Length: 248
Picture 1: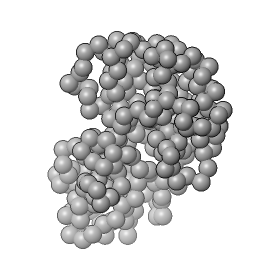
Picture 2: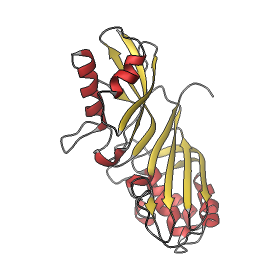
Picture 3: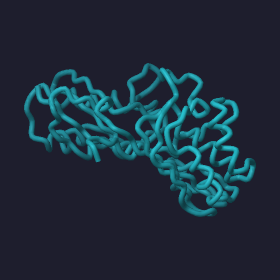
């Protein structure tokens, strides 16, 4: 069988997340349904990582073993003709035999968007966390520097996170934008804990709102205590931008 690597984009609003679950529709289930229709037989897929309910992806990586040879355009044009409008295969290529999209990844890039307008935005409500109080973006950016590097991120993991340990390496955490418009967090790391980026966002917003000083974020990190960090930011602001492979 030929191993196929897909790059998949999706609006996660209507899904319980990437992974197939019993409590609602998932992106994985819809993709595997389309693959089954394309091949006339069940096809199992694996992804670079889970995304939570309501979280989006611009560059989720998915692999499967193709039951028969098809031209690559069948995996883009053909599958997109079978998928709903909120899921799209934006790239397809032949992968090495045994390629694992999760274990083969050297890191991921995420983006978290905040709409900081004073009025609600009908066009941003599915892709941004709407905060109407002006944020101090400079203070958020300064506080974010404490989270770059290799640390124990226990203070930023979900209570039900199943990871064996909380040590992770964050290579990039940048806060850009301006109060009264859009604020963006760009995060890149080797691996992430459950809700880690959303907990970064919720904690940095506490600083942006003036509720906490810049130095508080480092104190939270060093405490390794989830109860000391900010709230988990809502899912719709988060997008998996890219899964990183190779040595670059």
